[in-house]
Image 1 (cartoon, rainbow, N blue to C red):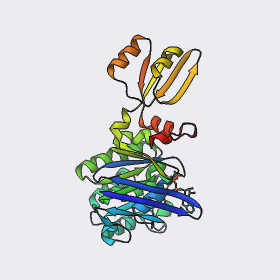
Image 2 (image 1 turned 90 degrees about the vertical axis):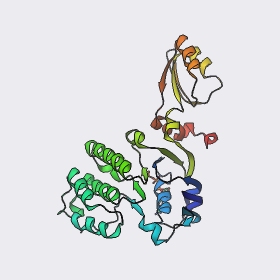
Image 3 (image 1 turned 180 degrees about the vertical axis):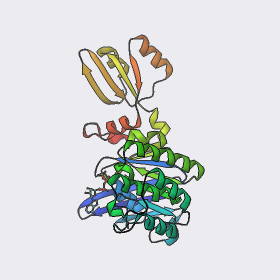
Image 4 (image 1 turned 135 degrees about the vertical axis):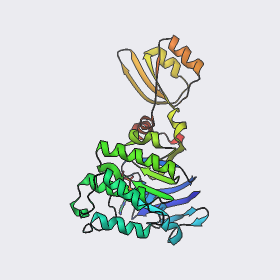
Length: 293
Ligand SMILES: Nc1ncnc2c1ncn2[C@@H]1O[C@H](COP(=O)(O)OP(=O)(O)OP(=O)(O)O)[C@@H](O)[C@H]1O
């Protein structure tokens, strides 16, 4: 279990992470979601012991993580900066990772490098943005670290490379279960991979839930204005649109099959609300719902 207790990270007068308390069971794939500046990187830096929180503690199985060599050896935190020297060649970067990472699989790293067309003889400075991102992915996956954190690492990769990455991540996770935290803005793309979701909003945890629970949490209802209004009465409306007598509402409610049948008989149509939609509704300034905390 990874336990964060009252974790606050400040930069001068900016509170990047505000009194966060989280219990993260290990052996799962997490999605850390949040709008720009919501504190994801700051929280992950504290989680990975890259930064001492201004206040609070991070514990792994009851052990304080900060400056603890055993914990740090088992943590791989990949940021878009990569934390490698630009003048190094890819081959050397992978070799050094092999020395530092107890779980490093050099054959797997070579296969991944091949898959992402990473030329081992190139210097990091000569890599395109996408290939640089791919190097981060190789470092993250081949480390097989019990705690692997990928902080928007793969944003520079093209759609084909990202699809390869998602497939590799899932296959390797199933073969070598570990805790993987993905911070991303590409929510729809990764949604199917996630087992748990944490949403940060202005430095605070807005929501921490099983991904399956979120997938079925909301529903979109469309139909004649008055019928929709009747159906939605008493339920939390996350979003609403109206045009020419037709209304569409997104409800924070999971109706029973009988309710759906009743609605369909009255001329309503129903649609799912994905994790990305839910995220947008929960974090858009007009819809911020403190009550869901
Ligand atoms: N080194 C720093 N010095 C000063 N302020 C910082 C520093 N790092 C982050 N911040 C501030 O802390 C807040 C949270 O930033 P952080 O990078 O953690 O957010 P984020 O969710 O990762 O954002 P993004 O999605 O844009 O990458 C922001 O207001 C940011 O400006």
